[in-house]
Length: 364
Image (cartoon, rainbow, N blue to C red; front, side, top):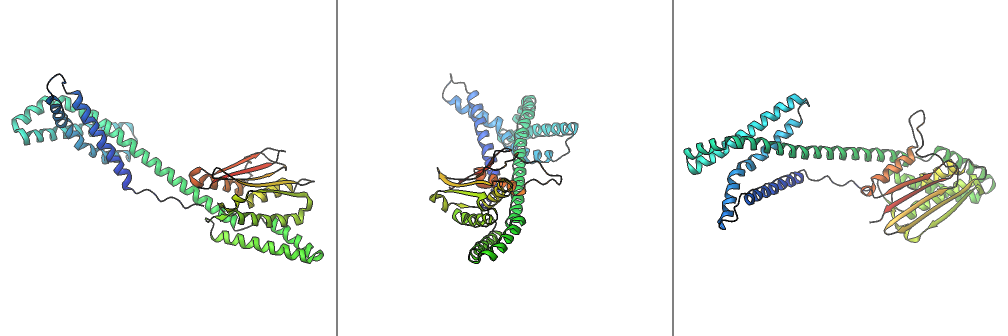
C-alpha cells in the first residue's frame, strides 16, 4: 500500500487565509474608491476617492483579524441560541466601538482634537451601523473557514482510521491461509506420497514457495510486488487445489506480458482465487471454469478473476455474529484507499450467475 501523504504544514492554511483576507480588503478598498469618485471632475478626483476609502475603511481592515480568535472562541462555546446571540451582540458593539475609537485617534493624531471630535459626532451613527454589518461579515466568513478546517480534519482522521483498520485486517489475512485449504492440501499430499512420490515432491516444493511468499508479505504488508510474483504464487495455489479437485477445476489464464511487471499489493489475487474455488466451484458437482486475466490499457492495470460457479447476492448479509466476508471487504476498502481513490475494486455477481471481480490499478 502506498505510504500516506505527509500532512500539510499548519502554516499553509493560515497563509492562504490571510492572503485571501488581504485580497478582499484590497478589492473592497478599490471598489469603494471607484464608487466614490466623481469622474466628471478633474483626474485628481480618483485620488481623493482613494483617500476617502483609506480613511473610512482602513480602521475596519486593521481590526478585522481580531474577529478570528473571537470567532474561534465563540464556536467552542455551548450552542445555546440566546447566549450565542448575546455574545454576538456584544462582539458587534465592541467592534463598532473600537472602529470609532481608532478612527478618532487617527483624526486627532493628524488633524487635532477639534477635528477628531467633529468627525466622531458626524460618523457616530453610520459607523456603528457599518461596524455591526462588517462584524457580521467577518464572523460569518471566519466561521465558515473554521468549520471547513474542522470538517477537513475530521475527514482526514476518519480516512486515517479506516486505513489503519484495513492494514490491520490485511495483516491478519496475510498472516494465514484458509485452514480448510491447508487441511485439504496436506491430506492431498499424504495420499499423493503413497501413489506418486515424484509428483508429491514437486507439490511440496510449490507448497514451500507459497509459505515463503506468505511470510515475506507478512513482514512487509504495505510493500508492493511484481504481478509476476503474485501470479506464480497463485499458480502454486491452484496446482495444490487441482490435487484435490482434479478435472473439476479448469483454469484459464490470459496474462499480457506487459502486465507482469506492474507492482501490486501482495496477496491481491490469492483471496479472490481462493474465494472462487472454495465458494463458487468446489460445491458444484461438475466443478467449473476459473478465468484469470491481467491486461494493461491506458497506463492502467486491469485484473479480473471470474468463475461460472454458484454466485451470490452482493454485498452478502452479515451472519448472526456480525461478520461479513472480511477478506473481500478488506480488499475492497484497500483498493478504495489506494492512489487517492483512483484504484477500483468492482464485484459482479448474482445467484446462479457466477462471481467476477475486476480490479483497475493506475500504473502512474
